[in-house]
Image (cartoon, rainbow, N blue to C red; front, side):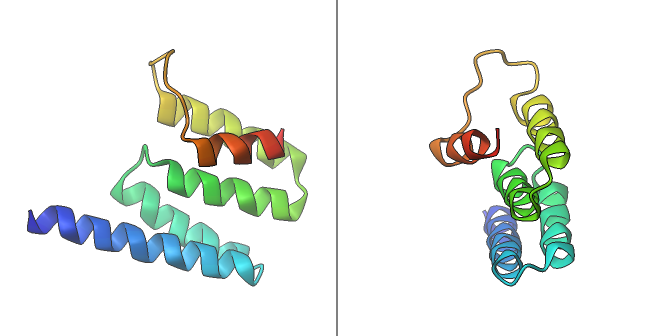
Length: 96
C-alpha cells in the first residue's frame, strides 16, 4: 500500500513538472520529467502525451510521428485491441 502511494506521488510530481516546463517552453525539463514517468511506469500514456505535446509545440512533424509510433509500440504492445484514453487519442489526432 505504501509503495503504491509513493509511486503515485512520484508520478503526480513528475507529471506536474512536465506540464509546468511545457508551459514555459522548457523542453529539456519536460523531457527529464518524462524520463522519470517512464522509469516509474513505462507503459503509462502520461509521459507519451507530454512528449507529443513538446513535439507539437516545436512543430517537428518527424518527431511527432516517431513519438506516436513509439507510443503505439510500447503502450499498446502486442494487444491489437488496445485503445488509448480519450485524452491521448485527441492529442494523437491533433499531431497527425
